[in-house]
Image 1 (tube, protein in one colour):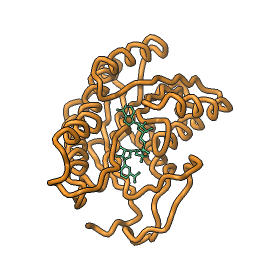
Image 2 (cartoon, rainbow, N blue to C red):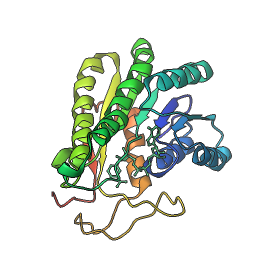
Image 3 (cartoon, rainbow, N blue to C red):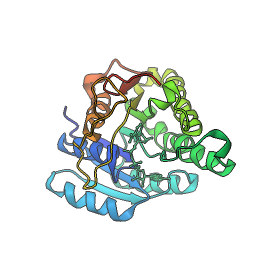
Length: 245
Ligand SMILES: NC(=O)c1ccc[n+]([C@@H]2O[C@H](COP(=O)([O-])OP(=O)(O)OC[C@H]3O[C@@H](n4cnc5c(N)ncnc54)[C@H](O)[C@@H]3O)[C@@H](O)[C@H]2O)c1
């Protein structure tokens, strides 16, 4: 895959799957605008990417804040002049409890970060993609949005919304050569040292192990590439042959 001359925006880029995407896109020649709340980890990633001959800019921004997203998008467009690829990856998910124990505030917070951020980011960059008749939007959802996970009702609802938003938007903009797809990871274990190839044993899928950040990034980059020019409105699971819950 060759992304030379392409500009990719990645949210939640500082760690995990977002970091895997940043490494993969950079190795394939894309210029990068990396967004996260965590300024320190963003800077560390920028240093790690300095070996790649691409333009990497980092932006500390809360993607659930519409004004902050619009300010950041303006800075990105002022610097790069265009955005070809948008990876909506930022989300929160580490909360496991029955529905009766989930406070309304957490529902609002999760809906804002996991769903509304994608609305804000998409509205910021879609007009330029439509105008230039080129765009790739990849939303990161989850198997929880497909099957529904017990003790993750709220999270599952947000990811179900992401999958249906993806399919609906894809139909609105297909004629403009803006392709919109979803990638749904199964279980991805975080590694202590930020190793994007890290996996662990897991009983949740027939392969018997978790997926790595890079295994998810590989599909995200493929969907963003010119090789994927006839694929849109899809949700593809990266789940090691999940045992459906
Ligand atoms: N890890 C998994 O097992 C798994 C499984 C299924 C789906 N996913 C999805 O994959 C995506 C990435 O998950 P992960 O586990 O690799 O990452 P993570 O949860 O470890 O990190 C997410 C990153 O997003 C950033 N972030 C969170 N809220 C933000 C906000 N409001 N504004 C800006 N940045 C924000 C965090 O600072 C962090 O760097 C998420 O959408 C998640 O729901 C993950």
